[in-house]
Length: 443
Ligand code: PLP
Image 1: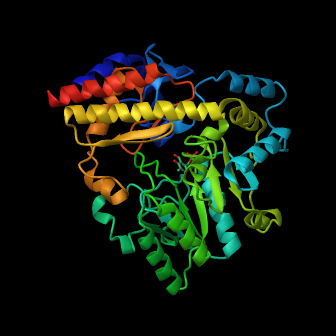
Image 2: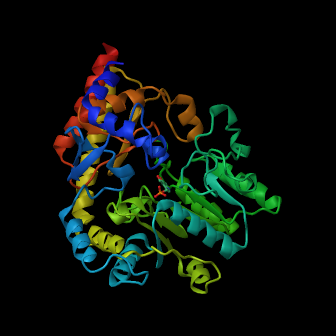
């Protein structure tokens, strides 16, 4: 209560804007993921690792636009590229040279030769699934239970499911995430638990026996929407082997991991190559972006126009200029060395605080991404997350952070994202905030 009251006092300007906003914008926000009780913090600007709100509070930004800003705010290379580009025209719906350069670089980083563009992660996963369905002629798809892949109907299934409705690993329930998703679509999306290759194989075999062999498995190689849950050793290789053996297309949704955990994303980091990869968020340096990379064999379906992959803003010149600058001037090998080092320090520092104060939990980190799991047991999938993750401490940690000038993505499913412009001082701020909370908790 004390932390909430403190935040309220610090953010009166946001309160006033929110009171005005609800009159013309539903819930006072552009997107439901921006709802925040009692009101969202209104930001005015960002520079480097920092953002400022309308009340003049400065925050070290660990939210980073849900991980879109691994470059940090207003990075000079991106500002330059976008400023130059905007003066030359914003949109043509015709390709520019930047699209070619970006495709060549993504092909090099991800080991997949053919690329197409969209404007969000949702569009990327939607088009990737359509390609898989178009190529195989099959309708059913497999996803990981609890995994978020965007807001279109194919994948708004079995996320945020109440614990009682999860069902056994063998036959987890397909449940629409919110109203408005047709049951016929929900039934086409079959969930399996993360980190359980035998369960995936049994489910695919059972579907095949019913004459419903899936078109694809879509998954995050490291789950980023349950905090961070890493693949256990051998899991991704087993998934690769199973999907290949059954002729099921493997899609890695790297919307959160791609460009954030290594130059070539989780694909590079874990050394397992999918048939299709989806990118978004960090690709555009803060501009709406998305990409699909695939083998030439799969993209032949698009090249022949059998599968439609279209969109007015695909390959938008501003986005592509930002992506080019990001890939060549910002997300360099040195940048990943920096992110790995800072991420390692933050992860180790959080673990040390939890241990020192006897707070149940542990920290997971992979380069720029990480989180503290406040839990009494390891989190390896959605079921263990729901059973063991403390529901209140992540919320309290968010408040402690906000009151100590650390901005985090709200919600216990979210993780931090460091940017290439973060410094040790930002990490210290985060650690000081967690230490204060731990001290207050244990008295
Ligand atoms: N895939 C993953 C793994 C995501 O985390 C998200 C968004 O958080 C999406 C897809 C959807 O991306 P967007 O919000 O850009 O549509």
